[in-house]
Each structure stands twice: as structure tokens, then as C-alpha cells.
Length: 288
Image 1 (tube, rainbow, N blue to C red):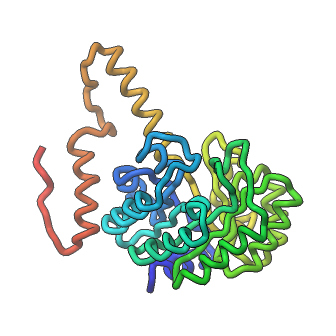
Image 2: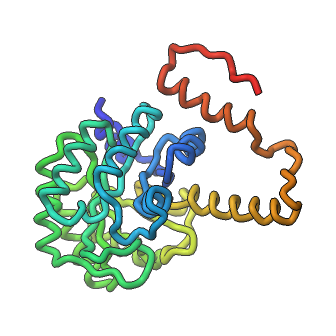
Image 3: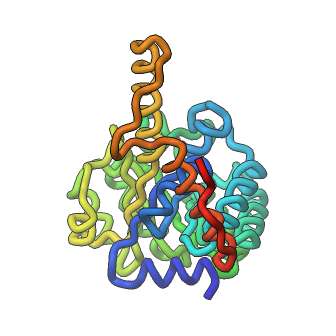
């Protein structure tokens, strides 16, 4: 089964599918030890690869190279990739889709924003005319072979959200996402207008959307739960705290206690990647 069809089967299985946002190979290693599905977050990639906010700086070859490394390290995980607006032009979007499918991406998310784009959970978003987005989306759908395609709208006004949701549900897109949806009631309304089209809900700490559990989302008719930035925000919190403690202790490293990560625990996590990539290759743990 292709990667796209494997994710498509999972989405339509009747159970909600969680996808965890990752921003580099190490965060992916942590997330992959807990979940079967990874989301290549544009927010996280812009932060980790460029040190910049997610407002359109990502160059598509950088994203493709990152996804290729992920697929080599995690051959059995679902990989859903954020390609923003398809890097502006429909032709570029299709070219990127061809590359991603060839290197083993499971699916992509294509949004209807226009430049300058914004994270889906911040103010100031502007959207393309619906007809212009549909033209780009349909070209991508014609280009892909088995790749799963998530059609995303960043509309914020309720009437426009429902108009676009209905139009996107009528396409051959596999899944629909309304990003930054602000209430449970709006989720219900979107679910009602899109028929049996699978629905994705994206939540981000401090974002516009309500914090909901997987069981709550499944009761609302959501098929996919995407978490864009849990690894990134946890890393920032932990690193900031570690630097404060190091300064407070005059540069003395803290004693390793049970549950803390030191050299051995970190190496053990990374050795799992060797096992995933070369399952028949037996290795003794590295001595520390």
C-alpha cells in the first residue's frame, strides 16, 4: 500500500487519527516514539530552519529535503506535510507535490491564503478568491497519484467559512480543514455542510481554537486531530528553563535524577532511528 493510501485508509477507519507536529529530526524522533502520525509543521519548520516566523519565508526545496530525511528515518509513520499556499504559483505547487510523493510523503495541506501569509491562528490573514484557490487545488489533485490532499480554508467570517467548506467538500480533496475555527458550534456547522468528507481539526497552544480531547473531537465528527506545535513550544519552554537554571547555578550542570534526560537516554532514543531504518541490523547500545 502506498503512503498516501495508508493514511487515507487510516483517516476513513472510523477512529480519529492524531498527527503530531514536528520541527526537526530530533523532535520527530521523540514524537515517533509515542505516535504513528507526524505533521511537518510550517510554523515549526520556519522557526527551526530559519529562525523566522511562519509568514512565507520557507523555500520549497528546503521543505522537500527535510521530508526526505524524515521518510528515511521513519519508514512506517504517516507524514502529512504543510506546503502553505503551494509556494504561490499553481505550477510550483504541482511540482512540489510531485517531489513529495516521489520521496514518500503521505499527504499535503494546501491553504487558500494569499501573500503575505500568516499562521492560521493569528490575525491579519487574507484569502484568495474562491475560484482562484479551486483552480490551484484542482491542478494539485490532478497531479497527485495516491498522495492524500487536505484542502484548507483560512476564512474567518462564518458565512464565508461555510461557503468555502461546502465548495471544498465538492472537490476530490480527501480531507477538509478550517484553520483557526473558533468554537465547537462552528465545528458542528462545518460538519453539517460537508457531508461525509473527512474533517481535520488543528489546535495550537494559545491559538484561536478551543482545546478539545480526541474523544470530544470524535463525538463532533472530526476524523483527524492535528497538533501543530506541541514539540516546538515544549522545547522552547524547557530550553529557556534550562538556561535560567544554568545561570542561577553559576554554570554548574544539574545532577541527573530519575526521569531526567542525560547522555544515555538521549542516545537510546536516537538508536531507535537506526533500528527503524535498518530493522535487521542488530547493534549493541553505545557505551557512555
